[in-house]
Image 1 (cartoon, rainbow, N blue to C red):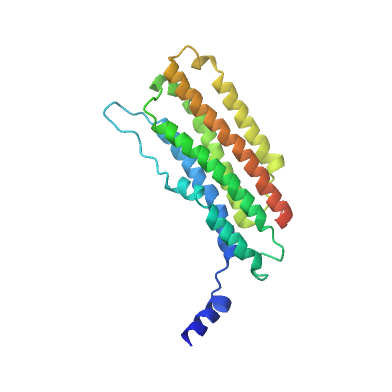
Image 2 (image 1 turned 180 degrees about the horizontal axis):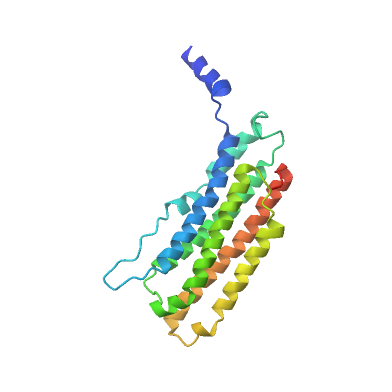
Length: 230
């Protein structure tokens, strides 16, 4: 009797759908990585004296995203067999969620590399960091905002207008980073310091590249899933 009541409640009164969980977890990953990018930037540019330890970076969210593949695939497999319910109709494109998940994990791996760069003992001098601090901080804020917009687009099932707005903005950000990396202000410095800054800027550009691909994937999801236009 108790088992029957439990099954009845799970299916009809308080159903727990794999599709709902996959949809929610996919959208929240964007905010997690946005926070990771912003935290990396704060840690890298924090003024640290010789007697202080570097700010601690929480890598838990980034690693949880990186290790989410099996969970995503299991949820997608269950979601394909669920009946039409709520906002998810028949033949809903759950495969696109798997593809987006792959792109998100690729982005997470780059962010983890940046976190290792931030924790590296071969840090550049404070004056050299000061040269790139303002533009890089601005870039991080823009990337964080863009990531959250993409996540919100999925959560609310509204088109993100990637081709018209997001991709051009990311391309503009990358151009800024390219100009910054070739700036005369970064030339003539010690080799170790130049390498540190060059590596940091390279990883930041890799993040921008991966976000551009991710934005296109989210836009494609909106198209095939019939998301509403904003």
